[in-house]
Length: 113
Length: 112
Image (cartoon, rainbow over all chains, first blue to last red):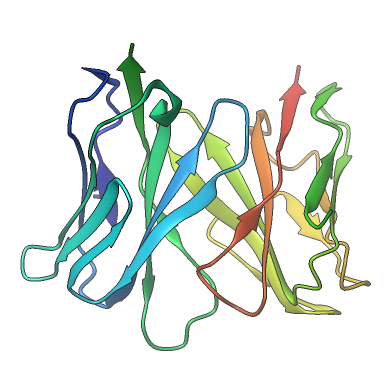
């Protein structure tokens, strides 16, 4: 079983829809939770991060962490065709942070005009 | 313009040959990383370096080697010992050992 599980999709939604992307994890030591966005044939870019539990909002994007369920989510409101990309969740433990991240498989999102 | 450059974008090699992938950054970052990305697998860490002249193995270091002689450069050599080298290779850097990593555009290596 992988430490981080993410449904690879693809997920196809109409423009303007609310998108929910999710990851589950098994390691309770994870404290930092990140979402990276990767456009086709490009390197990933950090979209958002949260520490421990709770919500964080940035424009149309909301990241949510539920440590009791070992479940994280990324919500995209009013989705746009430019949001079409692969979304990767990543996690890191709190202690002895070496920059080592554990990534999910990535979910491919397509937003249709 | 600050950033990370990887060259070449596409690389083709015959089986049994070693090949070196370039990664350069001008962000003045201390830490650098190499990842491999395969379809359906996400990113897997090959090697990382927190300071010059020091580096550590990641989760899938077998068949790979690195050097860190300069802060700006972290080349990755894919040796003939790597059983399945065809993949998309990504280099990243961060200010210190951090989750806020900045990625290069990647090199797609095909070995036949």
